[in-house]
Length: 370
Ligand SMILES: N[C@@H](CCC(=O)N[C@@H](CS)C(=O)NCC(=O)O)C(=O)O
Image (cartoon, rainbow, N blue to C red; front, side, top):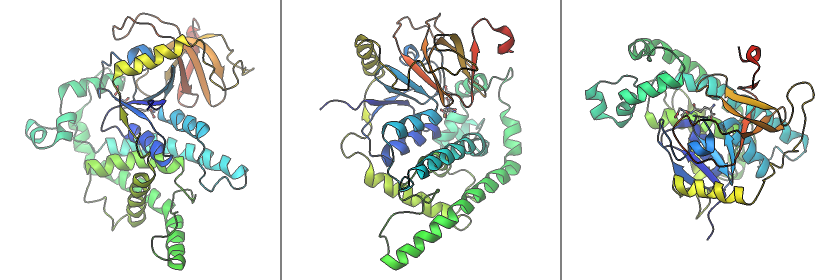
C-alpha cells in the first residue's frame, strides 16, 4: 500500500501540531507522521525548511506549508469540509473566514494564557515527579525558547511563576468567552437530542455547523494542551465550563469515529520524508495550483527576491523568489544560502507562508527591513 501524501513534521506535546492532527482526523484523511525534536537542531528537516524554525510544518511532495493557519486553509482547500455551512454556497465562505479569525485569537491569546501556566523553571524535585516539569525545567529547553522569543535575556522563569496566580484570571476569562460561544450550539444540540433521542445527530460545534469546522480544530489544539497538561485544575472544571467540557468530549468522540481507519499517523522517518521531496523534485517543477504568475499589482512581484519571516517570534528569514502571491499566502522558491543548522544537501522545494503574521521584505531594501 502506498504511503499517504500528507506528511506532518511535529513533536508530541505541541498544541499547534494537535490542531493539525485534529483537522486531519475530522476530515478522515490518511497521513504520515515524522517525529521531530521539540527544539533545534532538526537536521533532517532543515533541508526542507531553509531556516524557518517553527514547528509543525506540513509537506506534500516537495511543497512545504508553514504555520498552522495556512496548513488548515490548505487542507480545507484540497479536502473541503461538508460541514453544513456549505449548503447555500456563500455560507461556506463565512465559516472559513470566521474560523480563521478564531484561529488568530486562539494562537495569540489562548496560547499565551496557557503557556503562562506551564511549570517554567521547575525544580529538580518537580522535574523528577512530572514529565511536563522535566521539559519546562530543562536548561536546554529554556535556552531554546529564550532564543525563539528573540529576547536578549533568558526567560525569567521566577517572574512567570510569581505572576501565575494573577495570570490565571486571564485564562479563566478567555475560557468563559469560549463557554459563551458554545452555549447556543450546545443548547440547540440538547433540544435536537430531546426530539430525536439521546445521542442521535451531530452538532454542538462552535460555528453551529453539522460537523466540526476548522474553528473547532483550532480551539481543540489549545484546549487539548490545557486538558492533557492539567494546568490550573481548580479553575478548569466541568462545573465552571459545562459547554466547553461537553464539546471537548464530543470532539474526541468525533475524531475517534472519523479518523482514517488504517492510515492515520503512518510513522515514517525524517530520511523517508527527505526522499519524498527529492523524488518530487525529480519530477520537474510542481505547480502550486494557485494561479501561478498571479501578481499583486500594488506591492510585490512574482520572481522578486525577498525574505519571509514571522512577525512575532522565531523570526528567522527565509530567502527566495516569489512564485505565487495572493492576499492569503506567499509561496517562494528558496535560494539556498549558507545553512543555519549545518546541512549540506540542497533540495528544490516550494515554501508556502500565510500573509497574515509574516513580513515580506525585498532583498536589498534596508528601509523596508527596519
Ligand atoms: N504560528 C505558528 C506557531 C507555531 C509554534 O509556536 N510552534 C512552537 C512549538 S508548539 C515552536 O515552533 N517552537 C519552536 C521550536 O520548536 O523550534 C503556527 O501556527 O504554526
